[in-house]
Structures are given as structure tokens and as C-alpha cells.
Length: 144
Ligand SMILES: [Zn+2]
Image (tube, rainbow, N blue to C red; front, side, top):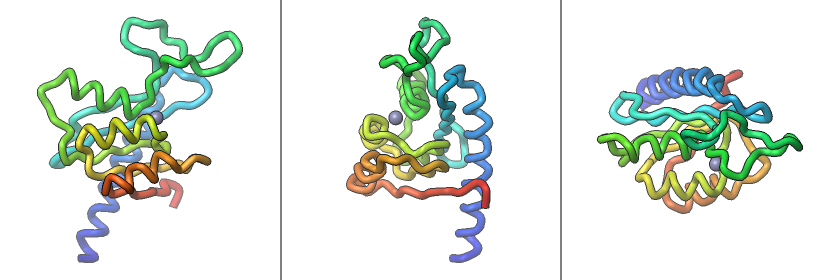
């Protein structure tokens, strides 16, 4: 149905704009990424890239490299659900950048069924893994 497709696209763009705004929370200086998890038209989780709870709010080391324990936005959003009474089963993940392979594994295991991303990345192994797991993957250009 074309009308429904348009409706979905409008919603996708709105959620993606929210994820983009959420990315501004990130104190990482190299790259700011935001993620939202939506289920039954409700935002059930959110995340942005950053260090684990209780660690200093600094993502880069003295050489400007990202610290190995920085969590990606998707990982933060998924693990936030792990601490809640909610479930990500069947949910949609909106993320402002294409998921990496480590996050793709978490997305699969979290039961997320659809991933919408806004920014392409040179590596596509994360997206390939999602597709192999029959997760619907959609690229959304916010500048269109
Ligand atoms: Zn990742």
C-alpha cells in the first residue's frame, strides 16, 4: 500500500531526526551517534556513544583515539532495555550511523526486526550480518 509506505517513511524520518538530536548528548568529540528503539509506536529506549556508567565522560585518549571501552549508541540503547522491564523483541532500531559488526550481533540477539540508519560507513559487514539474520535494513537520507 502506497499510502502506508508514505506514512512509515514520515514516521521513520521523524524518529531519525530525534535520534540525530539525541546524538548531541554524546560527549565524544570524534563522532556523535544517536539511537532510538521503537516498539508499537513507543520509544522504549535510547542511547548515544559514550563510556560505561561511572566512568569519566571522555571518549578519547590523550592521542585523540577512541577508548576501547566506549560503547556505541546501539549497544547503550540495547543494554538499557536489559535493565528495564521492557523487551526489544520485534522492535525497530533507529541509528544515525550504519551499525558495526559488534552492534549487529547485539541487534540480532536482542530480537530487533528492523534497522533504519542514516549515515553510510565504509565497512558494510555489520549491515551484511543483519541481512543474513533476516533483519530488515533501511537507509534513510535525512537531507532528501
Ligand atoms: Zn557499533
